[in-house]
Image 1 (cartoon, rainbow, N blue to C red):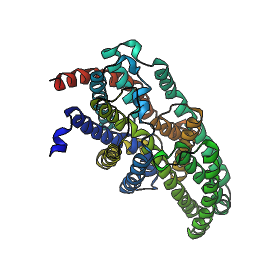
Image 2 (tube, rainbow, N blue to C red):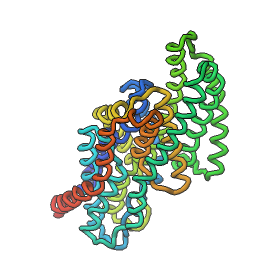
Image 3 (tube, rainbow, N blue to C red):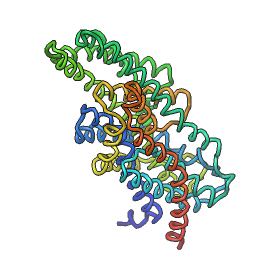
Image 4 (cartoon, rainbow, N blue to C red):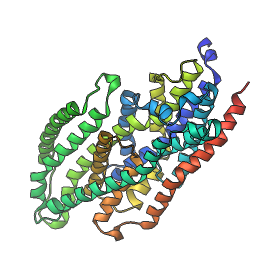
Length: 417
């Protein structure tokens, strides 16, 4: 009992709010990542929950600790902030971003978790400390990513699906083509999985590889993937020669490929976006223990566990709302279309990381789905749904900032003795 009684009240509140934020991330952001797999029929809702649960938790627990300081240091000038202001501000950021995500999930709108937490930090920083305390250059980078991430993913998805359609689906004998080109698809999927995993960094496992090392490792993994592709394609019964069944059986190969890319995105998402819930928690723990605010805030295993568990529970309880929007309401998806969208998103994540461009996983995946839809013509998109999604993206920062100001003064009044 003495251990629990020694924990400061602010840390208890921060741990609860981090769990709340992680739950909101699971319900919105993770559901968005799994939406294409569910919409195409590659995975059932419960299958997506299982896949995302395992890989999101592994990404959060094993590789999620190295990005959390960006949340604390990248947005604010820590030389201008007091210890109490940091504590109340981070609590307010968790509460406001989590509340915004839950509101968006209620209406099935996929919004950016990163933008929600950034908007929250900007809100309390501007009001509590001052305009000059905010790193506006960093904020402008993030605003520009509204355009760069969905545009880049959409262009890549457009070309991946066009290549898939012209080289396999629209040929006279797609069965023969998938037998011939399938191993190349597997190679590229495993290559991207390797880059997403290795280049993103596995510092907690002492695997901090540079880009060249990650590239070599990914090439090796790609060769393994090509071998597995040959194995899977031989085992999948590709069916009779009549056109209707031939196409449906070819899609089976893309089911396997789409599930693999879903695993890669889930791991990458867990390793990066968990910082949005446990970054502020680590900052509060660092502050209440009297540490130097400018020093690195250590991320402890129990924090990563809170993030991983919250994400899984959020996906399982409310994630179906956003899954339906991304997987079914933007455009009609099949396994081959969903594969093109997810592979494009994973490729964009790697390219953006290499170039140092801050991007949103949500915006990237939605942009990729739009690119696949455009490859079939503008009529294949539900423009009303697209318009609502874009409006929610624009509204994310100001709403999160406004909520953060309210929660900042709320927690300051609640926790001041």
